[in-house]
Structures are given as C-alpha cells and as structure tokens.
Length: 153
Image (tube, rainbow, N blue to C red; front, side):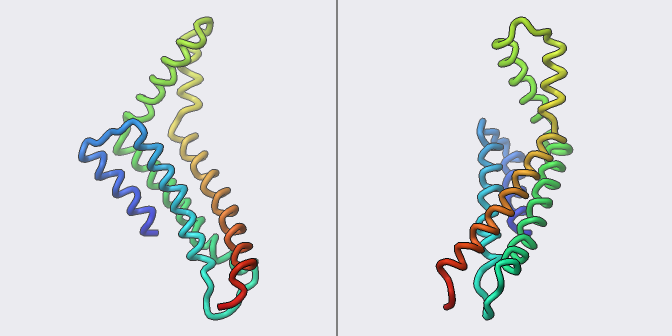
C-alpha cells in the first residue's frame, strides 16, 4: 500500500509547501485512479503456474480493494484534519455559480443544498465507489487480456 501512502505524502508536502494549484486535487484524483492500473496488473501478473480466471480476479482484487479503502481513509483524514478549508471554499464557489445561474431560488435554501451535496462524506463515498468499480473493471479486463495474449511464457 506504498502507492496510497506515497500519493498522499506528495499531496501533504505540496500543501505544506503552499502549492495550491487550481486543479491540484483533480490531478491527485487522476493519479489515484490511474494507480489502480499497475496495482491490478501486478495482482494478475503471470506466475510460475497457470491460474484460473477466478484466481486472477481474486489476486487482483486482493491488492486493489485494500488500496481503494486506504486511499479513501487517507483522503478523509487529509480533508478532515489538515486541509479543512477545502470543502467550504469549494462550496462557496459552487454557491456563487448557482446564484448567478438561478436568481429565483432562495440563497439560504441553495446554500443548504450545496453543503448537503458537496460534503466530505459524499466525496469519500463517491471516490470509494468509483475506486471499487474501477478495481473490478480493471481486474476483469486485465485477467481477460492475460487469457487472450499471454497463454504461456
């Protein structure tokens, strides 16, 4: 699970260094999602004996699912205890865009909707769901590709 720790360590170092690029958190999520690919491939990498499709899926998911859970826990801890202003800052930006688009709606009602939807809890659950779906997709995809192209070394 060194990948998860490394990604979050880089994010923490960037935060401490004061680097607040507008799309830094989006880039971080992209790296987190992309790291699932080599993790899954490593899980099904051909070993000395030929394994079944189910065994390959199991091996890949044994690495990808703990990675996914660890990343979400680290993201939650990071945004809950270190970068606490991130979600309030993002909520204000979303609120301002919503006010500009929907002038007829009550501002307090709009603020409640934005804070209910764009919260740390929802963010964590959505990231976890995406990571789990990608884990299953990548495990099946790479196990199937292994069956097609790497019959035996």
